[in-house]
Image (cartoon, rainbow, N blue to C red; front, top):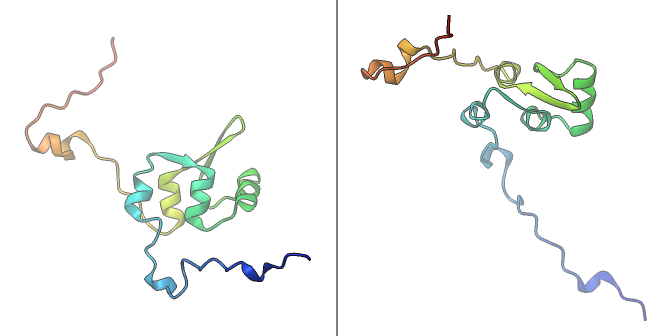
Length: 115
Protein backbone atom coordinates (compact mmCIF):
# COMPACT_ATOMS: atom_id res chain seq x y z
CA UNK A 1 0.00 0.00 0.00
CA UNK A 2 1.54 3.40 -0.97
CA UNK A 3 2.18 5.95 1.70
CA UNK A 4 0.23 9.14 1.65
CA UNK A 5 1.32 12.50 2.95
CA UNK A 6 -1.85 12.90 5.04
CA UNK A 7 0.02 11.82 8.16
CA UNK A 8 2.39 14.79 7.86
CA UNK A 9 1.41 18.01 9.53
CA UNK A 10 2.41 21.24 7.85
CA UNK A 11 4.98 23.41 9.57
CA UNK A 12 3.50 26.58 11.04
CA UNK A 13 4.46 29.83 9.34
CA UNK A 14 6.61 31.80 11.85
CA UNK A 15 5.40 35.10 10.37
CA UNK A 16 1.71 34.20 10.34
CA UNK A 17 -0.37 36.85 12.04
CA UNK A 18 2.41 39.43 11.99
CA UNK A 19 1.85 42.38 9.73
CA UNK A 20 4.88 43.86 7.92
CA UNK A 21 4.62 47.01 10.04
CA UNK A 22 4.96 44.92 13.24
CA UNK A 23 8.24 43.35 12.13
CA UNK A 24 11.49 44.84 13.36
CA UNK A 25 13.64 46.06 10.45
CA UNK A 26 16.67 43.86 9.93
CA UNK A 27 18.95 46.71 8.83
CA UNK A 28 19.07 49.92 10.83
CA UNK A 29 21.25 52.94 10.11
CA UNK A 30 23.44 52.01 13.08
CA UNK A 31 23.92 48.45 11.84
CA UNK A 32 24.76 49.63 8.33
CA UNK A 33 27.23 52.23 9.65
CA UNK A 34 28.82 49.58 11.88
CA UNK A 35 29.75 47.59 8.76
CA UNK A 36 32.78 49.85 8.33
CA UNK A 37 34.02 51.54 5.19
CA UNK A 38 33.04 48.73 2.81
CA UNK A 39 30.89 45.62 2.85
CA UNK A 40 30.45 42.62 0.60
CA UNK A 41 28.11 42.75 -2.38
CA UNK A 42 25.53 40.36 -0.94
CA UNK A 43 25.15 42.34 2.30
CA UNK A 44 24.64 45.53 0.29
CA UNK A 45 22.16 43.74 -1.97
CA UNK A 46 20.21 42.50 1.07
CA UNK A 47 20.02 46.05 2.46
CA UNK A 48 18.74 47.30 -0.89
CA UNK A 49 16.34 44.37 -1.38
CA UNK A 50 18.12 43.07 -4.48
CA UNK A 51 18.57 39.36 -5.20
CA UNK A 52 21.91 37.67 -5.76
CA UNK A 53 21.71 37.25 -9.53
CA UNK A 54 20.53 40.82 -10.11
CA UNK A 55 23.16 42.22 -7.72
CA UNK A 56 26.02 40.55 -9.58
CA UNK A 57 24.54 41.60 -12.93
CA UNK A 58 24.27 45.24 -11.78
CA UNK A 59 27.80 45.20 -10.35
CA UNK A 60 29.23 43.64 -13.50
CA UNK A 61 27.58 46.30 -15.71
CA UNK A 62 28.45 49.20 -13.35
CA UNK A 63 24.76 49.86 -12.61
CA UNK A 64 24.65 48.89 -8.91
CA UNK A 65 22.98 51.71 -6.92
CA UNK A 66 26.07 52.20 -4.73
CA UNK A 67 29.77 52.48 -5.55
CA UNK A 68 31.28 49.03 -6.15
CA UNK A 69 34.97 48.20 -5.99
CA UNK A 70 36.23 45.05 -7.66
CA UNK A 71 39.30 43.22 -6.39
CA UNK A 72 40.09 40.25 -8.62
CA UNK A 73 36.87 38.22 -8.42
CA UNK A 74 35.54 39.90 -5.26
CA UNK A 75 33.18 42.86 -5.07
CA UNK A 76 33.13 45.37 -2.20
CA UNK A 77 30.54 48.13 -1.78
CA UNK A 78 31.23 51.53 -0.23
CA UNK A 79 29.09 51.91 2.92
CA UNK A 80 28.83 55.74 2.65
CA UNK A 81 27.69 55.28 -0.96
CA UNK A 82 25.22 52.61 0.19
CA UNK A 83 23.78 55.01 2.78
CA UNK A 84 23.34 57.65 0.06
CA UNK A 85 21.61 55.08 -2.15
CA UNK A 86 18.95 54.55 0.52
CA UNK A 87 18.56 58.29 1.05
CA UNK A 88 20.68 58.80 4.16
CA UNK A 89 23.51 61.30 4.22
CA UNK A 90 26.53 59.63 5.83
CA UNK A 91 28.06 61.36 8.85
CA UNK A 92 31.24 63.30 8.10
CA UNK A 93 34.44 61.69 9.34
CA UNK A 94 35.55 62.86 12.77
CA UNK A 95 38.64 65.01 13.00
CA UNK A 96 40.98 64.98 16.00
CA UNK A 97 39.59 68.34 17.20
CA UNK A 98 35.99 67.06 17.15
CA UNK A 99 36.70 63.64 18.65
CA UNK A 100 35.60 62.84 22.21
CA UNK A 101 39.24 62.24 23.20
CA UNK A 102 40.28 65.73 22.07
CA UNK A 103 37.42 67.43 23.89
CA UNK A 104 38.22 65.52 27.11
CA UNK A 105 41.79 66.81 27.16
CA UNK A 106 43.41 63.50 26.17
CA UNK A 107 46.41 63.73 23.88
CA UNK A 108 45.66 62.33 20.45
CA UNK A 109 48.81 61.23 18.68
CA UNK A 110 48.70 61.48 14.89
CA UNK A 111 50.94 59.82 12.35
CA UNK A 112 53.79 61.99 11.14
CA UNK A 113 55.82 60.68 8.18
CA UNK A 114 59.59 60.72 8.59
CA UNK A 115 61.40 63.44 6.71
